[in-house]
Length: 293
Image 1 (cartoon, one colour):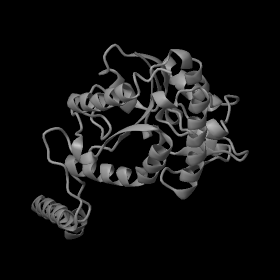
Image 2: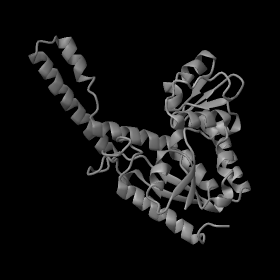
Image 3: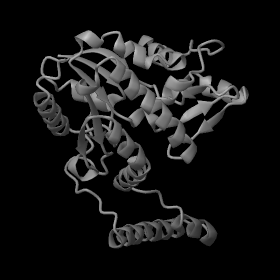
């Protein structure tokens, strides 16, 4: 099965569980905002990137050629997967109206620093400004796939971020649950302040520690997922309205895989989650008669 991806590790990791999968094109680190007005490669130094893959992905973003890379293989493709995770870091908007995705690679090679020095500003994910420009870019992506007769073979992976690791219960976000977390945080702060006083720290320092308690790992995952899932909501709703097929999973249905090969993150799931997503993909393909024109 020949697959093209416009998205992130969510789609790429899922593809590894699809029988006989062959990912012929992987458009990553590439916000759809770059499809509208890509910044271009001139003057952008990527020499600090050691990985050929990273250089290729950032260069593709700067050129805004993600759609072209997919359409190039349109006649051979059985499936196109889309996910929205790479939108999470926002994009750089230059004075001339061009954009560059704020990927980790762009930050690590100092291209983000150079953009700021050149007068560009970071447009944060979740803001109205980001959403409006993202909407134009996503519409362009869908239009490009439609022109290449790929819409019936395109599936959106609408997977929420997981708020808990494998084996843990999904965190509740109601008022009682939030009060419980606040109470437990105060208890940890009280214990830390007490230990500080016992070790000779001043009252002021101990008092400060009472109110500066770091969240536990579980709380951090839960909070990150809750914020991200709220910010993504209108993006996902619009994407579902434009893409004919989607496979959705709520945060309560998935879990973080602590042993994931890329490390534990709210968008790095268990094998069982990927297998469940694949079942949904194959069902959609069956409904469309194998998704071949």
